[in-house]
Amino acid sequence: MKNLKIIFTFLLFLLFSFGNAQKIGVVDTDYILNKLPQYKEAESRLNSQIDTWQSELQNLQSEYEKKRSAFENEKVLLVGEQLKLREKEVMDLEKNVKTTTSLRFGANGEITKLRTNLVQPFQDQIWNAIKTMSEKNGLGIVLDKSNNVNVIFLQKRYDYTDKVLDILLKDTEKDKKNSAKSKK
Image (cartoon, rainbow, N blue to C red; front, side, top):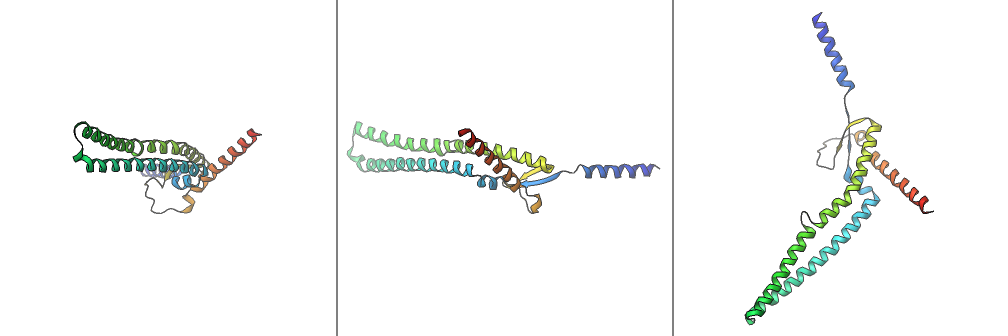
């Protein structure tokens, strides 16, 4: 009798654990981002700004190199105040190059901040679409295979990337229709 209770309890436990098993899905947020036309447009504007800054920095670097070279060549001819003044001019340009590089291209530079501000709204939209899709499909866990999650094998039926993308693109179409109506 006691063994029967243990077996019955074990069977109930197994049934309960199978009934509560979580469904797992996988999405690729990088793929989704690259398929969103608004993201591509915003990224293009950011890349254009980066190109402009790189050009400005190259011009500044070139100016510094010319001044430094001229200073090195004329150094022996300069005396007193002239020497100090030219040396300070070259040092200030070098400092300006380093400061500009750090402010724009450094780890906490303008580009990093702009890229974060660019991506954040799209990540929020993707998050909301993933939440909607996971609720529709009864998923308990959703992994992002673009964020260094090693997915060795994935059956297509567990890849929900296209479903999330469909939700986002439908929302985009709704927004376009609503803005077109409000313009009329």
